[in-house]
Length: 191
Image (tube, rainbow, N blue to C red):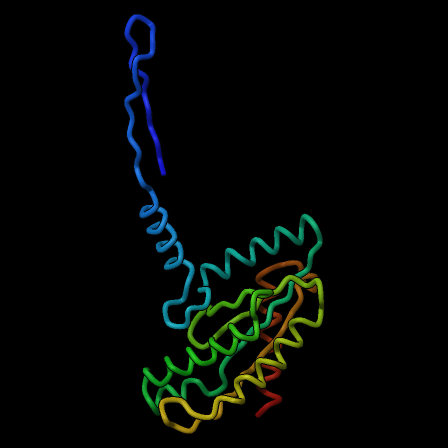
């Protein structure tokens, strides 16, 4: 609610008020909606790359100020292109949505889950407990393994994941690079 008012005077005496109210609830809703659009991946409902950049910058600042470390788990869907090429993009979209649902469920309220492009996802978590990302990785492998079919087609999804801790590198680009390299090493081991 927004209010404006002016006093009416007669011979230096207030004789009335003139004003109006404006309900700004709708403007607030529209602002919230636009912000949600700007920071949410429309396909999966997870945070998007823009939100990822904003979050990692905030965590980096927190590390510099208070030495609260954070981890990044880089996630890729093995063989995603094959699913897209074989069954079409709507199938591929459903794969992304299902994997995102697993990531959201595993992340809960303690981490930040983002789709940063294509079939690449990240989970960022401030590390008061160093085991969180390791546990999330194990739970995520389990959750995705439980997906047996998509759009009535038998499907066995696998993820490649790599994790890195900010204090290892003290640079967000290096953090991403380390996690990405470790993901590819894990992908190679699984072949």
